[in-house]
Length: 295
Image (tube, rainbow, N blue to C red; front, side, top):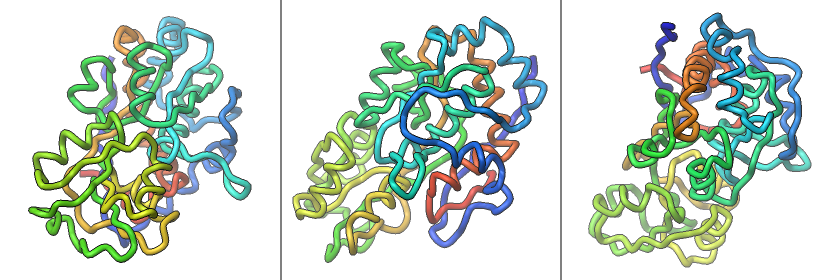
């Protein structure tokens, strides 16, 4: 089978907005996401013939949803993964929404499994305790997770609290600053060689990262900009430093050993990008200050 080809989506540009055409597609589906509980979704964007063929077989369904439902691993606090529902807004997150849509494509229950951080989510994927993740597809992770081609790139920057004298990423060079990083993430090993004078502090959850920044216990927090803008909302005066020191390449991943379902995941990924489903998930997850653009 020849699967469709596509180019990754790159998220850049603080002054731009997501294309309006994508924002309307699947609005009813994605706007209906609620608290994390198994459910059956009732509608799905028309899929192409390659996706239908790749995902229709009992073998693919059995590989991707061996328990009868698609267990999608997500973690709290990141719009790339999962933001909990509030009194005024439904649950959101690109990983959450793509997982829901793939469950519909497979005609199985959507069973989100919510973790405190990405490290726990990835551990569950390695153990086969979840069936699907949406995360930065690093070479190390690819040893235990089978990834689709990259779907989107997200800039990595640093969030500094109100009143910080640090005005740019470049200003971190040679400065002894306490920079928080998510425990078990790839950020520490990538950030340390670039800024050897920084003192890196492992932080278990994103909620704790915001607390430490607000208390002045950290001089900054390094992560992807989608997370940083979300944290900045909770910290008056906090700033995401302009530019980036790296990129994260997001893809859908399944545990190794489930390769029978890989063609379905790849075809679904291609269809998600081509149909606008991915753009809609990005828009409704409120990855603010971003532009959906092929490159």
